[in-house]
Length: 402
Image (cartoon, rainbow, N blue to C red; front, top):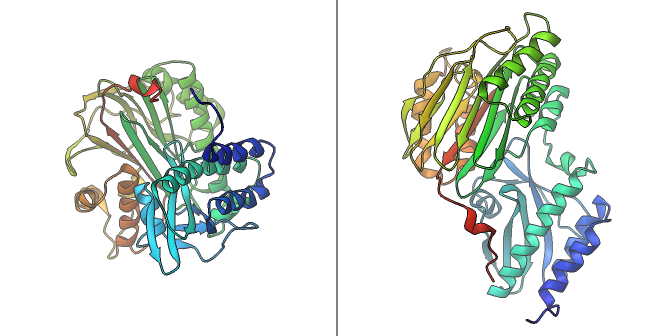
């Protein structure tokens, strides 16, 4: 077995070796230099803005910095939405757009120009983009630079708190995919979500704290913290609800409460269980059609004290999607004064679904379509979280393919 270092390994290895102690502001020059070594130029690192409308160039020495690029109707956006490399022929070469994937969560896009492209270039640059994504995410925890680049509007203190709580808004595995979105992105307060994939169980909670502004953000923060604590203690759905209820009741006044849904999905078998504490019922989507409203016995909102949680169950079919959402989505008024409503939500899901291939595309398109159809009006927070279950086994992925 030949273990000598080839050019590609040396290039990626040098980036990895030097990145450990590299300050965040020097990531861009290092990446630009690595691209130059493979004959590339005009390097840009484009990060998704908080509103999920634009890809914003990261400033930095050695990077090409221009205007933000719309995610819709652009080569960079096509790369981002499809999570695939896109090649754009130019008079003097090829402009390449590569997805920056942190696991399965897409951070943004790396763009560069080469005189020509072959399969060796494609393989090496795909791996380089993966390493760059990991560096952006890791170094982003040490600096405000990347967060500042993604902001296109001033952000409220409440929204600052909520965004700091969130897990990655997209996760894709062979068995299950999830994607979420919250609006208004720069002024969200009482809505939040959390999830975790622990072995074969996907855990999810979405919460909507009473009120607006900083008080609602603090209430939502306590609810999510209580949820995580109970979940990590290994309790079931009934115990999750009970613990969250006790925490909110003990720490806040009686008029402060949180509506919530807590869910568990066995990603191997497709068994879905959930507790609905004051939210609209989830929607079951099959082949881009809403086939059922998942009604079930309701439970009092979190913080009212002492209610017995009612657990609903449903066996999913492979390919099924389930949409969880908060009431701000359907209780917003469209032009003319009428409520948006569940029927209009269903119609919109079925209209946009066939043109969207992934849960991320679907959630993003749904949120932005609904915003346009109510003329941009947003008087309350709105959260969507979409799950697609495919099932099957993933044990083969742990075997090296060499």
